[in-house]
Amino acid sequence: MIPFSILDLAPISQGGDAGQAFRNGLDLARHGETWGYHRYWMAEHHSMPGIASAATAVALAYIGAGTSTIRIGAGGVMLPNHSPLVIAEQFGTLESLYPGRVDLGLGRAPGTDQAAAYAMRRNLASDENQFPQDVVELLDYFHPREPARVRAIPGEGLDIPVWILGSSTFGAQLAAMLGLPYAFASHFAPAQMMDAIRVYRERFRPSGQLQAPYVMLGFNAFAADSDAEARLLATSIQQAFVALRTGRPTQLLPPVADYAETLPSQAKAMLDDALSMSAIGTAEKVRSSIRDFVERTGADELMITSQIFDHQARLRSYEIVAGCMHD
View 1 (cartoon, one colour):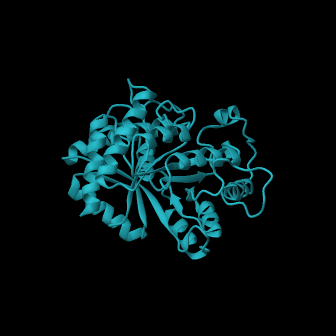
View 2 (cartoon, one colour):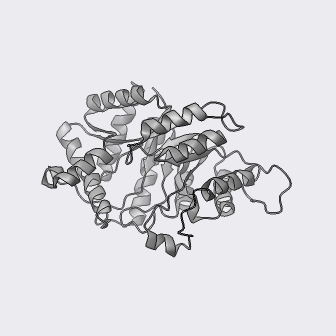
View 3 (cartoon, one colour):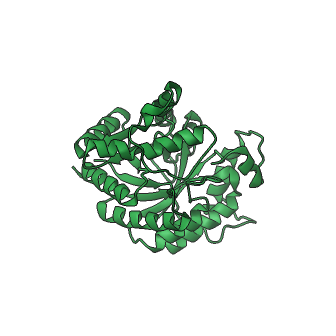
């Protein structure tokens, strides 16, 4: 089977706090290391009551200190929120602390709403040209093409794999042009997945980092010892999506039996679309869903996310998925 990895949004469950979310994340990363997961990534989000990983590089430093072999990285850093130099220094610091284990995934969305984006002093004007320019500037800090007046120390000369993240063909084109690996957010925005994969593979140009296209796809998994339990566990992320799409993001809520059945048809259709790339059930059902997904997409790697309210149930889900991937 292909490599498989963990995407942890550091969920803050109702009644918990960010500190507990980070401790749970470290526990998950340690277990993932023993179960054969290749990477552990965290994502940058802001002003979200249920997501603790806003200061992504800081959180990753904590995870790196408590693990030894699993790769750690951002999936991703929302580059428009930052200067490329600062991100080069942050991830240069991580690579200096945990050599050979650090990835840097870059996205062009703000990871928040306009009010929080303004609070971060972003230029809210849409400029599709700025993100590619910032990516190239960031790459140049790691490997300057000529003596530079401004240097990323630490960062300069370090081999930190840079990924482009996306949910449309824009990121696919940029990753292909720069010869970088591409991660698609199919776990919550699957609509353009197949088009983006095709564009990326057709237009890929080899680079010093990567000689052939490499696609990683996000995939939801809610695995349990019974189908009924797995369906119940999945209702927490369903509630989170409905809350987010209606402008009322919350902490991750406890599961509610038959939650989707209580929703109006429009909300149910939204959930069916957003979470269509999911495996829900026992090991047998999850194994079949993952194999079908990999065969259909030709994914080179899967990034598994399991937004589950109870930490022990989340660990069990990841354990079951690992067993499926090793079969």
